[in-house]
Structures are given as structure tokens and as C-alpha cells.
Length: 234
Image 1: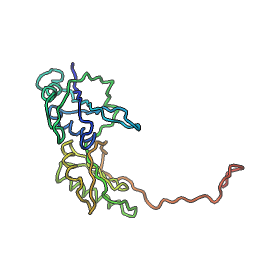
Image 2: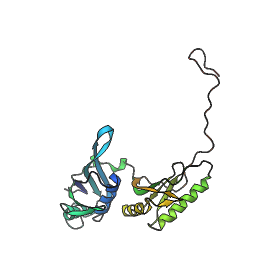
Image 3: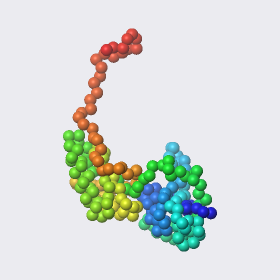
Image 4: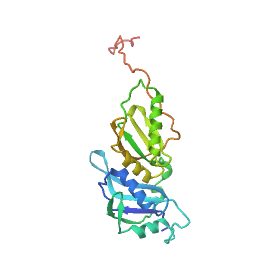
């Protein structure tokens, strides 16, 4: 069939780093055969209304002139020929890959209705929020994180969340995100141990600082309380 997608089965359900790390690992493995448009991990209903990974994924490539030719230059053909039934490095562990060309239907996967997300690293435990600090202080932290990340990956995009004491660093690709995540996890920022995790998020248009709460939040009880009869007081 003239397909641009690969259906992958028998994937590890307890991948080290979770589903996001597996997403990155699949991108790294299958990305060598062509430009990937989307990777979808299939889930099923678990206990307590959770979603559990089924061990199956769909890797969708951007279509090219060679798509469907079943020869060199066709990403799906090359990926299946090189990977199916073979032991390959998936993340940091060896795994026997099972994959085949997918009979993919557009109505079953509409990328236009889904937000476009990009690989990134989320770092937390950076500071305890202090409302007395000026916004310029957090802007300085954002610049400092960007400068540090720039020493290890190209053109990082950084956004801090002042009230959460966290920051998100978008990278150009999954490999850069994995590299930066490994460097930053359990490193120290202003004497605090950083917690880093891989994720995919929608990328903001600019690195403008978010608005933070100002002043003190207070709640004043009314002097008169309505007992349910007669007109409302005040």
C-alpha cells in the first residue's frame, strides 16, 4: 500500500523514563530513515481511570516522491527492511523491533486537530516562589538557564514559570533533549538539586515572561450573613 506510516508492536511497557522517553527513543531510531511527522503511542484503559501503554506505536513519516515505491528512498520500506525482527538500541537498552507498513487512514489520525508539540526538558525545584521578587529577577534566571543550555545544545528556547519554580527548555530535536536532560538531572541550581524530565509541549511564540501574582490575596467575610429569608443584606 502507498503508506507513509510504520506500525510498531511488542514495545516495552515499562520503558525507563516512561512514555515520553520511549517517544524520544522511537524518534531517534526511526528518524534515521526519513523526516518524522508524528509518533503516536497507543493506550488502553487501565485501573482507576488511567491510560496504560499497549506496547504499540504508529510512526508517521512526511510523504516524499519515493513514498510507497518499496525501494531505497521510501522511509517505510527502509525502516521495515532494516529494523523488523532485528535487535536495535532503543534508548539505552537493546530490544528486538517488530514493525510493518501500516494501512493508515487519515480519518483515523487527524494531525490538523491536534496541537503541534516539540521535544523539551522540564526542570523543577529551582526556587521557592517569593512574590516580593521583581519580574526582572525571574527574567535573569531565564537568561541564565538559556546560557547554560546553549553550552550543550544549539538554540535552546527557555520559558520559566515563576510561581512554580520551574522552567521548560525546548530543543531542536529529541537527541538534544535527551542529552540536555541527562546533563541537568540531579545537577545543582543555586544550591538546589534539579529534577529534569523529558516531555513534549506546545512551544510558545516568544520567550516573554509570564505574568505573576502581585500583592497579597485576602478574603474578608461579610459583616451581615443572609439567613435565606427576606431581602439580601447590603
